Image (cartoon, rainbow, N blue to C red; front, side):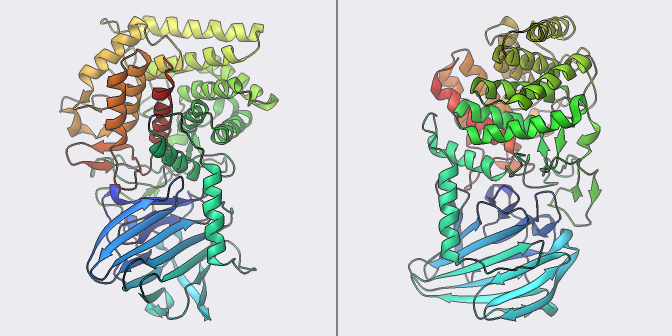
Amino acid sequence: MNVPGPHVLRDYALVADGERGALVGPRGDISWLCFPRWDNGSVFASLVGGQSCYLVEPIGRYVWGGYYEPDSLIWRNRWVTESGLVECRDALRYPAEAERAVVLRRITALNGPVSVRVELRPRADYDRQPLTDLHHHDGCWTGRLGQLHLRWLCGPGARSQDGGEALQLRLDLKAGESHDLILELATRPPSDELPPAGEMWRATDTAWQHDVPDLTNCVAPSDTRHTYAVLRGMTSSGGGMVAAATTSLPERAEAGRNYDYRYVWIRDQCYAGQAAAAAGTEPLLDAAVKFVSERLLEHGDRMSPAYTTQGAAIPDQRHIKLPGYPGGYDLVGNQVVKQFQLDAFGEALLLLAAAGARDRLGVEHWKAAEIAASAIEKRWQQPDAGIWEIDNRPWTHSRLTAAAGLRAIAAAAPRTPTVSGWLSLADRIIADTDQTSLHPSGRWQRSPDDPKLDGALLLPALRGAIPPDDPRSVATLDGYLQDLTLDDYAYRFRHDQRPLPEAEGSFLLCGFLVALSLHRIGRQVEARGWFERTRSACGPPQLLSEEYDPFEHQQRGNLPQAFVHALLLETSVRLADGDQ
């Protein structure tokens, strides 16, 4: 099999069902899919140098394009060939089953005859387990991938390759003709017949239309519904939303910053829940509240910054012995479990307060809020790893976010002596931070011993630690715009004396924070400009990564990055509602 090489990140689309997700490239190559869940071993891994892939590609010369069907994660690759147009409609059957995934692919010749080659080479556990025990009957192939079971319904004509480790099929379609491919992956042997392809397509389409709201109350309704679909597709049945679908995609080539983001970060989940609350969309809000509350109730003030979607501890980093994406490595697992991140407790309170304002909290959720507030009281003076997960310091952003969370939950709760104590604690944290971490110029600085600016310092004013028009907030925003933005791209912080773009890409989360900050102080035209600039840092599938390289116009880091999509959703809503 001629395994497709990796593409630039902006060309990949995501199809997902909440429990797992697949990246689809412009050659019709499903180059990344882990099963049964996001953080399990891959079944297709050509994205990171593996030999496993699922290809649907026109034979001969073609030009590629593609688009999502509205309000869904149903993707259509489209190719203009020398004989006509051909499309491949891709989706994971939705809603999902935890122990079974169904990959739906429908190939259609739109206006002329076309020939398409199909190649299926699955290998489980990051390419360690090839396809074995292959059997065929009447257009249906079954086999094993280690402990996993595979069933492929492809119709007649497919033949095995490479000793049964791969399957190949040529399709010659007339104008208007379609052909369905159904790939089932399961943890147990299949015991039932799959429904007809048309029935599964209709159910998938109906479920997406049901789950993605209208979202007319925003400045970019179509793009905002798409970003909501992305967030929904990354949220599991247990409520946990993975930070990204991928692992080890580099922020900078060989720069050493390669991480596995196929896990649930508490902070990111809270961002998504608060965005959903702002948009008035309760399912994603309820999912976030459920997952975060369960972690607080289970682990208290020792809540980890991140978990698997099942609420388990994240394994430590290890190499999977694949080449990796060019410029990256082959790491899975994450060392975040060893960290303390104070702001996660503040974000949890902000999330619960947003849900409380919509009357979405039960007794157990209020108990979780009390645990989070107690954790802040106990640990707010401890150094933490901060939002960027670097060295432990008394980070200003972490402390102010904790104070913002205390103020927000106090406003949402009935007045009691406990609530008064939360407000007093918030005042004490802010007063102490003002004494230790206010720069002589009147703006916030990163920490008592680090006088520099940081994009995260825009958040406390947005979340209510201090008012947006407070002189400290205004000075922080003005200083940030002067020192950490370039050509209307925003950066996290200054790594060293190099020009900003040479250290890392622009940070898309920060671009949306600038837009929100400008909006809150009435600078609406500038806010809208920042929103438009930041949301355009994507490719045809309109997925946003963590960083964007404005020199090369390329995406950097894992894809798609959920917290960037969460801030797009929130910014789109707030810029339209006039809330300042």
